[in-house]
Length: 253
Image (cartoon, rainbow, N blue to C red; front, side, top):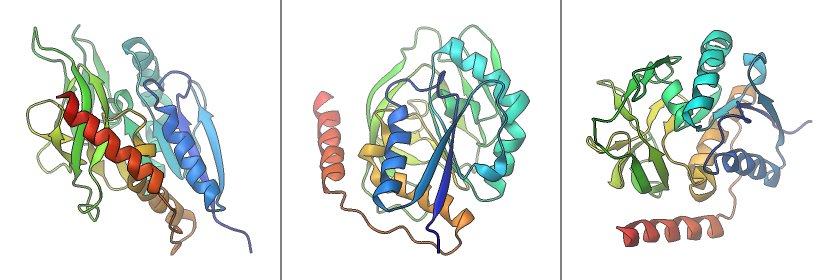
């Protein structure tokens, strides 16, 4: 009997992986290997096709404006339907910063350029008011992910100029305890839609928040292996790193 298998589709690895976002893929792969899960990563760039049947877990990171625009055109033209099809059939996804914005309905930058998103998340991102600063710094957020409200606080680093606003009824990922979050006003960070998670948190996010990494893995693995339960890992070091990051966030003010 063969063991569990997982395919990770890494969207625009060459364009959208700033601020340590590639560490999320490294973390997912390592946590699979520790458990004996056969994991494969496919980097899917501009012009590449995406087979929804072979994408159990999708990842897209952040980028500078130019790279985000390049990815946005390709995402909408070539990959929107396969992404939606993969999610509808049980895949999970993590979208960070620029990827998070493109998984919404639209992103408007300070120059007035509108990038259409693919509508995984019910949200829009608009430019900051004239004279407003970018939202930069360490973030601490209490989890609002359904079923994970008692998990340790999320920690990460944000650096974004856009202000993301969730539609009424959209599910935030977390409630901001320290930092700016989606827009610096409503107290929410990120968004959840089914098995898709969107967030502004870099850092990398998953190594310091192992419970979220395992949530994504568990969701993805049950697509191909119904009833599968992730074996527990000793996350002592990861949780110490998370606690240290939370302390530093508050100490920095």
